[in-house]
Amino acid sequence: MATPHINAKKGDFSDFVLMPGDPIRAKYIAENYLDNFREVTNVRSMLGFTGIYKGKRISIMSHGIGIPSCLVYVKELITEYNVKKIIRIGTCGTICNNININDVIVCLGASTDSNVNRLRFNGNDLSSVADFDLLCNLVLASKNLGFHIKVGNFFTTDLFYKNNDDFFKMIQKYNIVGIEMETSGLYSISLEHKIQSVSICTVSDHIIRQEKISVKDRESSLNRMIEISLNSMLM
Ligand SMILES: O=P(O)(O)O[C@H]1O[C@H](CO)[C@@H](O)[C@H]1O
Ligand SMILES: O=c1cc[nH]c(=O)[nH]1
Image (cartoon, rainbow, N blue to C red; front, side, top):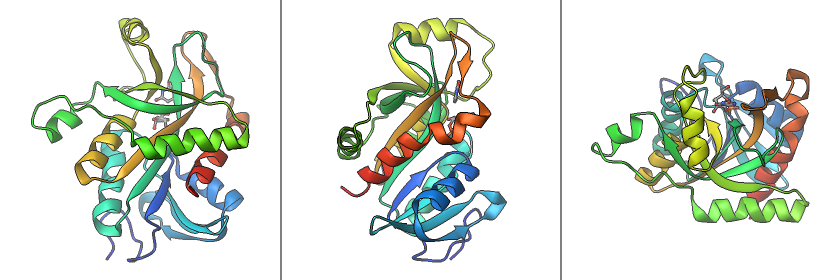
C-alpha cells in the first residue's frame, strides 16, 4: 500500500505521529528516545520510524520544509495510514523582546502569507487553530517535567529569506511570537479531516537581535521540546 511519497506498509505507523521538518531530527529522536524502533519509510530520504516510548507505540515522520511538502506527508498519513494525532516538533524564529533563543513555544493559532488555506477553503480565511486537548497535554507535560513553555500565535511563511523589513513590524504589532513554515497548513488539513494536531517549536533564531542556536548546540537544545512532546503523547 505504498504511496508515491511513503513506502511503509499498512499498520507500520502508530495513529499518533511526531513530525519534525528535518529527517535527521526524526532519526535522532528515534535513536535516542525510542525502544525497538525501526525505519518504516525512506522515500526521498524523508525518514519515518515507529517504536516504543515508555510502553506506548508511537511514530516519527519528517515532513520537509514548507506547507506544500508538509501537507503531502500529512495527507497520506491521514488517508492511507489512519493517523489521528500529530505533533509538529519544529524550530522557529522570533522578533519578541521577551522571548529568547532556546525558549519553547506551543502554537495556539497560525496566520499565513501562503495561499494554500484559501485554495482549500473556497477563497475564505480559515481560522487555523491547534487542537485544544493536545495543546493542554503539552502544557501539562511541561509542568510535570518542570520546564517552562509559552503559548502564543505564529506566522507561517512561504519565505524563509525575507526582502521586506515591514513584515517584522507588522507581526510585532499583532503579537506574533513565532515564525515558521508549516503550522497554518497543518492545522487546516487537520480541521478538514477531523484529526487532532498541534505544533511546538524551539526558538532557533532571534531575528531582531541576530542571534541563533549554533549548529553544534542545535541537537541538544531541542531535547527539552522532544521530552515534553513524547510525555504529552502518553496522556
Ligand atoms: O525545524 P523545522 O521543523 O524544519 O521548522 C523550521 O525550519 C525550517 C526552516 O529552516 C522550516 O521548516 C521551519 O518551519
Ligand atoms: O522558519 C523559520 C524557522 C526558524 N527560524 C526562522 O527565522 N524561520
